[in-house]
Length: 338
Image (cartoon, rainbow, N blue to C red; front, side, top):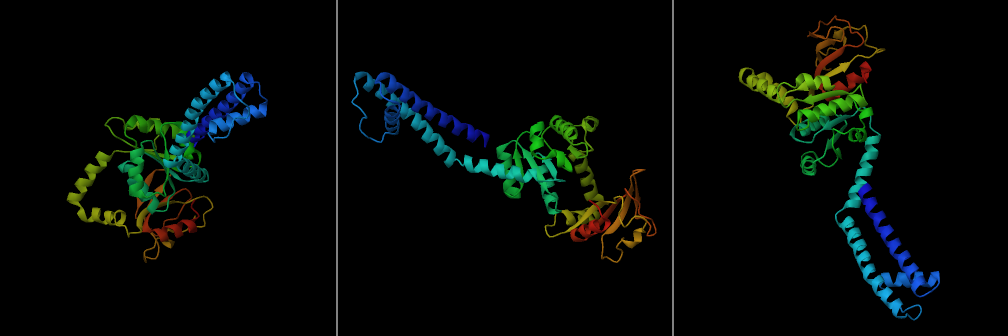
């Protein structure tokens, strides 16, 4: 939008300068009044073919020739530039970006994905399927085009450098719930983590690790967790060999387009009506509610796997569940989780 506006302002200033220059020239060369000089300049630049306001002497004709030649150049440039803006869709693109920015400015508790490559697309697909709001940052136009082909045009995406603070601000980092750093290099991902934590210390940052030996550096940069795709891929291949049924079960949840079953976690906030109640009251053993498979104690950071039905629920605990998305959403509301 700024680039289009600057082009239009430049054209306007060029036209005004040409008109004012022509008006001043006729006043100096011919000694005409302001209105006659202005009128003569306008009909000359616009090439409407009207007659001369007053008879011109030799000096006036020379000046008119110069004004016509200069005016043709100015008008041609203005016409071609405005035509290019319209034909190339710069105006529509600028307004689209402006509308998108207004949408982003209204978001809160959304997720920012830095990088629209393969990993970014997988993350975006999963978050969107589970009802999360996302904003994507990518600076390569070809990558953006491919991303839209895969994910559709309804995803909010900012064209810019995710390592720059200004770009993260446009993506609403101050109100974001989490940030995914999946850029091409570990250095860029570290910059994203550092900038994101500086702008919003409460946002959870997950970084992609590209090379060995940089895991701790990414943590020191502000990442809450670091994922090494090659390490995860190796574990996955081993699991495919020795426990194919278990892996197939997880795949059926994530890859099946019709599947609405997911692992999820729910934090128990202060004041929840379930504090002090037994796990069995919401465990869902009859299949009419999500199944609680583990409880994370924030004090010890240890998981109580397959908790006993009489275990009491405490504030601050995180319940790890498996169930349909509708059941999970309903339980979140009942527990009072944000």
